[in-house]
Length: 248
Ligand SMILES: [Zn+2]
Image (cartoon, rainbow, N blue to C red; front, side):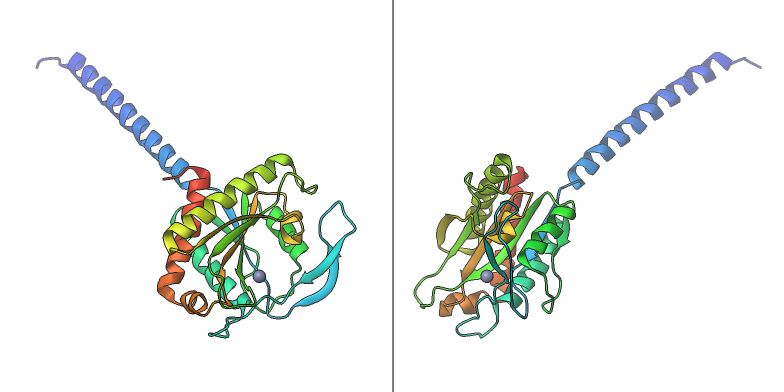
């Protein structure tokens, strides 16, 4: 019988090399997938709640200036839907959309009947480990004419957060507003500098507050209650977050 031991050794060596290469490429594929999946955690804060809280709290960590804990919010001029309900509806849909894109999500509130002050909302988002915070609101002009969306951000003059966080808040606001208006076709009313918002001032992470549309405008009010339009609203905000992080 012919001794083919050397041949067997060569075959085994080839097998080991092939296995190592395939395991290696599998591991790098897995690494790439994990990297793709490991998107940041996003805090979503649905503005207002069922009952306003007129107790006072400081509007920022370094000031004695006070404002009420949670304002009542507005109501749809035609639909009569309260703003707190619209904000939570969009928040829940946004959570699903962001999770489908690989983000982790922290919801500051998941019910309407809560009592969480704006300061506590910011602190909850800070402690959640979220990377950024999206605050959802709808506007009221007290007249039927005005329509469209805007984003409110803290400026460098804000004494409550670092310059870096303020800079990032502005960029986040721009990304979210641009993409939101692109998806929904809503009028872009631009960015608005606001350093008096308790829920943004106590935030240690980049934060934007989007006014998604006017509930005082009859057609915008109706539109914001339509499921097909809500889908666009949610995708627009998610597109803005993608743009902020540089995801395609
Ligand atoms: Zn509001």
